[in-house]
Image (tube, rainbow, N blue to C red; front, side, top):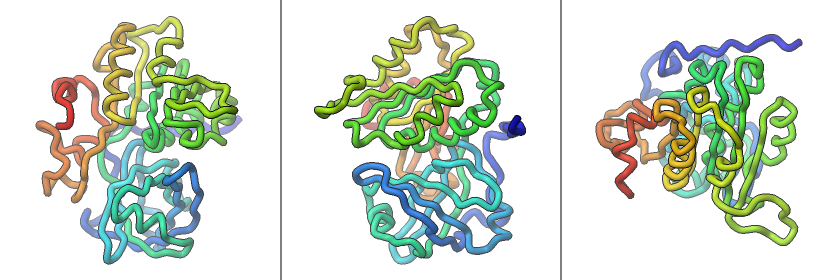
Length: 294
């Protein structure tokens, strides 16, 4: 029997590397894996082993990746944070920093600040059924939570992972789904546009929620990340099934420049997504999310 991995959610924020939060630590790009068109997963290792030993992150948090001469970008961790293991980041090439990273090769040098932000409330999910709803690259910050539930499967009830993508080619981590299912996790996928050889679901991800069957609403928690319009409809679907607002958790995306709530670029109503989020409980942001394009 594998040892049970402890889940520590005693604080809303994990301890970042000791010292100045503005300090970027030298790291090297150790591996690159193409996930889908325009999206790559990177393995990044700190050059100083003592820095690596001092690093600790929780599922849902992010790092600031610094490319010298180009700038920084906030990127969620997409793998477990384990001692002496590289950091895993899945990145879509959409801006100057991420496009430059897409052109980088193994051995490329960069800087890392972090980890920053809030995390998925896995401690509060224990003993409950968990619905993970992901759209597109929104599966990346949810994958570490899936890994933690796999490693501690007996602590959770039914776990359902519902994944939506534009096309079958855009489904992230599809080679891992069988392993997730082997850990007694239900995995369902759907796409907006089917290809000729696609035999799976076609339609919005909320259709998968409606097919879950009977929910123990008070004992069900939803974790969601993806386009905000998708999350709004996912919220509506589970709310219609009686799941309370306090059991719904979202990871929100905003332009995070400083990561410590100093610059104000990521302000959303009273919240600074970089330090109050990115993971926030739905009842904290429900009124704000009613406003499109805020």
